[in-house]
Structure formats: C-alpha cells, structure tokens
Image (cartoon, rainbow, N blue to C red; front, side):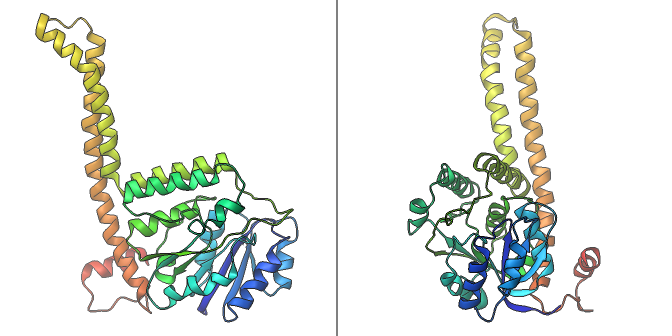
Amino acid sequence: MVQDGIAVVIPCYNEALTIGKVVDDFHRELPEAAVYVYDNNSTDGTAKIARDHGATVRFEPRQGKGNVCRQMFRDIDAACYLMVDGDDTYPAEAAKALCEPILSGKADMVVGDRLSYGTYAKANGRAFHGFGNDLVRFMIKWIYGYAYSDVMTGYRAMSKPFIKTFPVLSEGFQIETELSIHAVDHRWRILNVPIDYRDRPAGSVSKLDTLGDGLKVVAMVGALFKDYRPLKFFSLVALAFFAAGLVLGIPVVREYISTGLVPRFPTAILAAALMFLCALSLATGFILDAVAKSDRRRWELAAYRAYSPSNEISQDAPWWATEFHHRDG
C-alpha cells in the first residue's frame, strides 16, 4: 500500500449540492494531498460529482458516519488524515493550520474549533446543537479533566499512529465524541485551532437528528466512561446505592435501638439489599479497573508498533512483546 502524505477524507451522504466545491477547495489549498470521498449510499449523484472534480471515490454500504470512518481508517495509509464533512461548512483555508502540527510531530489530533470565534453560534440556527455540544464538553471535562473547545466538530487532523490504534465502535454521528474521548483517555497530544464556520447553503439539508443522535452521543459518553474508567463509574453507582440504603436504613435502625423491634421488615430488607449492591458495585469496579489497566498496557505496546516503520518484532525483544505481536498480528 502506498502511503500518502496528507489524505483528505470526506464521508458523504447526499451532498451533491456542495461536494464539488469542497473537493475543489481542498485541491486548491492542499495540492499535494490525496482527496478521498466515501459515498454512504447517496442517491443524488454525489459520487459522480466528486469523481468529476478529481476525488478518489469509494463506497461504504453500511449506513452511518461511524461505519464510513471505520472503513476509511482501515483502507487509507497516510502520515496525516484530515477529516472534513462534505457540506461546505468548514473552511479549506484552515487545512494547512490543522495539518502542520501533525506533520511536524507536535500533535496527534488537531481539532477545528468552531466555537471560539463565535461564527458557529451565529451561522447555525438549529435548536439545541449548541446546548448538546456544551453538555458533552462538560461531561468530558468532569470525567477526564480535559476541556475541549469544541467536541462535535467534524473538521480535525490526526496522525497515523492515532488512527491505526483507534478502535471505532460507533456507527453514526457519535464518531466525533468517540475520537475526542479516545484522544483524552489515551493521552494523545491534542491541539485546538479556532476556525470560521459557515452554515449549509440553501437547499442543503443536515442529516443529523438533534434528539435521536444527541441521545446516542450521551449514551456513548456513558459507555466509554464505563469502559475506560470503570472504578470511577462503579464507585458512583455504589455511592448511589449507599445513599439510598442509608436513607431507608437509618429510620429502621433508630426504631430498633429505641424499641428493640423491626416493624418495617420489608424496608429493612430493601436497605440491606441496597448496601449489598453497593459492595457488589465497588467489587465490580475494582475487578474491571484491573482489566482496563491490562488492556491499557496492551494498547501502549500497539501504539509503539504503530510508530515503528515496520510491524516486525525484533528477535531480541522480550517474550511479552513477541507474545503480544503473535496474538494481535
């Protein structure tokens, strides 16, 4: 497989109105880059227009942006991956500013921040989009301690090691959130570059379902929280069970101390069950935390291999590296 220097990757679904201009703009700004358009079952001629404008067109039959990105990342080999939507809302003029930190080795993911300049709030008139972005940003800051300027942006540059060690789990518009959380949790180098944003041109329709996709994004944050930080997640679950058990149990204990009787026996049983669930949740958290740490060690080894020009393991490598290579290779 021939490696590209910069690969501009554009997932598309029915973007005939804008895709030609998007391809032309990135050819102009990054003449040395390879431009790939992945058509996701478009019915409006998107693929033909993209091909006519000089893009390499490929097809992904599994519906959903996450599915498209998974296949793009598997297929394409490049030093820098510049992902952008095909709706002409992101400025190609910012492409070099996003790619430069990747190519110079200063960052592993550069995020095109639509919010800092205020153009997103002015141009995007869709209700609750800004609220949803702020909610996910708050959740990531609270869970992982990193403050993104813009979580949901579809304009970002990423390094080859980042892409080749990123397991895409999402199927739809959760992909941006998944990329953001993966970068923070695995301690990749992240930069935020403010960009201007423009709304879709007249006649172009967003494919994002604000409520449905928003709920999926929040669910994705919760699922990754459980997978990446199980001890913290199950400690919170245990705390909830403990508080409920305390609320129900204290009156029963007080009554027993004063009278020697337990007249509210069902309440006592429920309080005891909640305390048992509290202990069980804590035990689950400790066990899964050990599993997560083991997975992290394995992932770190995979990341080292991704930085190497060859995936072959040296004969002088320790036994655990050789075993990991055979198991995962």
